[in-house]
Image (cartoon, rainbow, N blue to C red; front, side):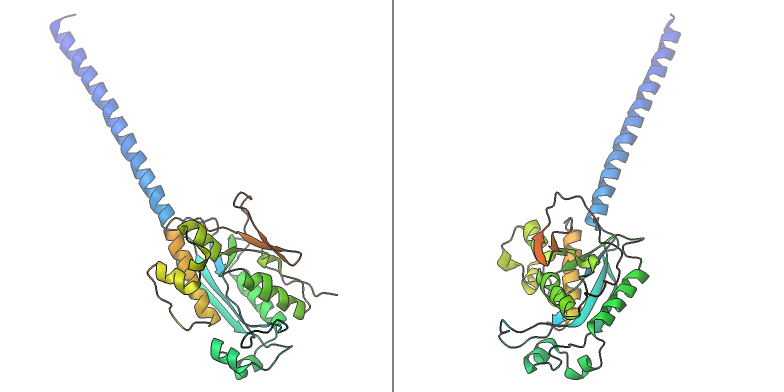
Length: 271
């Protein structure tokens, strides 16, 4: 091989080597770019569900709430959180006419801001529940989009809704049998004790203040939604952690396969 041929082969080798290096650099650059995008997408609200329905009922009450007092739902709000855009996409609110204790106590009016005139003009619970289901169906929840219910604690579903369905003589709705208890999720994710998971304290710890009127069901739901959005931004994987079975409250393990709530249907009347 002549000196010229050797130089030519060496030049070809250098070009090939440079080409391999350039390819490797590009692959590495694309890998890190992809990792960054995936991380960004996760921070921006990657969730198990397409939507989260935040519910916070208001119910009849008396000062001191004697044990024999029967609570009836008087406000049914829903705040619809889009877990991809991390925005409140829609809201639903209807008041409910109580049947067992149709006259609200002064304490209840003062606490919730719901007046006697408001509940007197409202529909009874079965009709309101039908309106809720129609609203959810229109948004294709449980059909086109996966979703979960979310509450501030266990009482909304396991107590208020459970009692109300018995009062109204209807079966417990299947779409509300499992839910995310945000207090549990918050405590587990941020590693804080149970006494640090009240609504106002959670907001305060996240650098937010309550927006609206406390004990307004819709305003409470909006503030709970703000906490859920922040938790998604912080990388929390909000998922169902409680359910009701046979009228009893139960914990759902994080190891249970993920399943969104079913398409909402109006429950049958009890015999």
